[in-house]
Amino acid sequence: MLPVIAALDVGVLKALDLVKLLKDKVAGFKVGWDLVFEGGISIISEISRYGNVIVDLKLADIPYIVNRVIDKVVEKGACCAILHGFLYPSLPKGDRLYVLAKMTAPTLYDEVWERLVEQVRDVRGFVLPGNKPEVVAYVRKKVGCSYRIITPGIGAQGGRPGEALRAGADFEIVGRYILEKPDRVTEWAGLSSRCFNTP
Ligand code: XMP
Image (cartoon, rainbow, N blue to C red; front, top):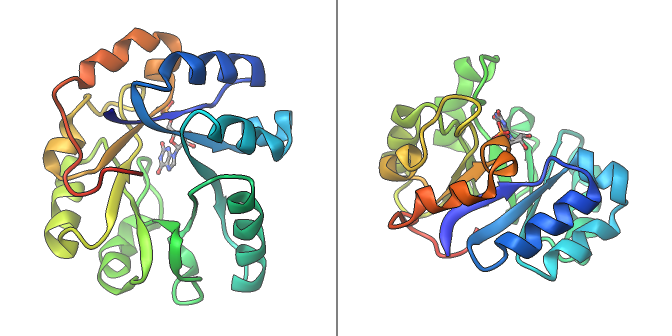
């Protein structure tokens, strides 16, 4: 499998075509608000028949509510979900959670991401900007192989295929660049995850 997570930011029919096309090529699929609003929560079960599913609702609420939402998406077949790191220290823990620590676009995370990476523990991994390989390299050095690192920001947002992987990421999250031309996944041939085989 290529170390790519396809971000399915498209309608239901197009998403299903894409998962059928990419199921033996990419390590997983990311499902966000777009698809859940259009297809309902059952779209998660549908897509998880074809591969690993990360649900990206960028959750940001009290732990009780976040845990309830995560229970529901995991029940539907997702491995895990992405939530906002700014919740720290009121951040739920566990292997089902990816923590967004710094975004591809400028945000207030730019002022706190190093602290988050230093202090957040007992989660599945971190979401970091793939268009900033130096950030990925810094975090990998800090956390070793204790946590997964997944990175959006490739293609449409300037990151080049493979750059974040070479800096230490496990999987590159790619939306528009491969949604527009699915054959582009071949650009990841020969690349591999730094530490984990599954997203
Ligand atoms: P593109 O089309 O830019 O899609 O490849 C990126 C996907 O990743 C999700 N995502 C983020 N995108 N900065 C981003 O630009 C982030 O920090 C981030 N975290 C997650 C985005 O929602 C889209 O699905």
